[in-house]
Image 1 (tube, one colour):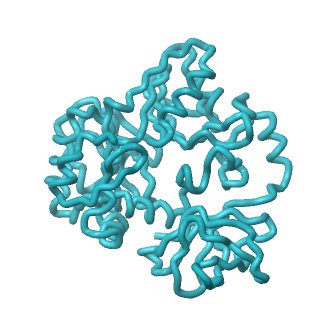
Image 2 (spheres, rainbow, N blue to C red):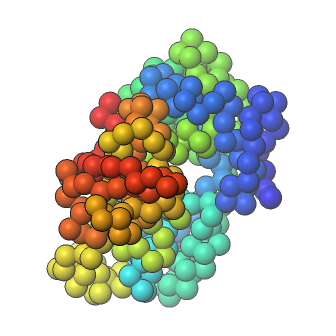
Length: 360
């Protein structure tokens, strides 16, 4: 198991550490509900240094990014980022990722920790355009500073006007006494804030300064458990749960990041698929009565027949009700449709709803 550069800091703070994607990671500090509410109402800090970072450079960098990603990276100007996915040859998804245009001919791809080796091998196999590839995953740390008070709490740490950085935009500048830090208005919580990319040797200084600056704003460290409840309340997909090598972007509701303005892996087949109604769709549901849906629970129809499985589920700290995502036949996918979640021996009624669960 690997440790992030902040491992000792988490242990000193009393974090419960668990194995995740090959890393020892803090799953919680005070408790998932307290940490969740901190991000929804104030500001919290996640160590997500386990994520992978690939730098694609050179005159043909864009060609490679376009070939392996579903979204249209040619629309990116320097300082902008884009959510995308890497399709495979068989209709599924290698990974979902964020693409940053750092310079005219330099792109940063941020990928899921569990997929670093798989993604690197896949992208490398498509690199017949001589783009320069560098895997920076072991050298860079990543903090997600999330919540409605993030801008105000962090402004004293940078000469940049943080309120000027719009969603899915970034700057490279000074932060917490360190130069050349990526300050990105991205995150997976739905409550605003920033992601800070820096070198491993710099992250402890940044972490300490962030907590000093945020002290008057109720800042707290946040673990992976609350990261999961926060992203699920927004209906954001988690790779390995809601999307994987077998799920189609269209089934997963990710058609909006599939652009047929260029050729990419399996684009011809995906273009044909787009014309058809998918057999199944990823839906969001809320339980109609008390209960907690969990990943792997069966979804059944009114007669008790299994029609799908829960891919992500939890008790929503914000809504105080059981929520989840799961694949069902398209006939059950309309908001308002009634389904049932098999929780142990009881089929609990649930209603398909429109995302996000949490409206803020």
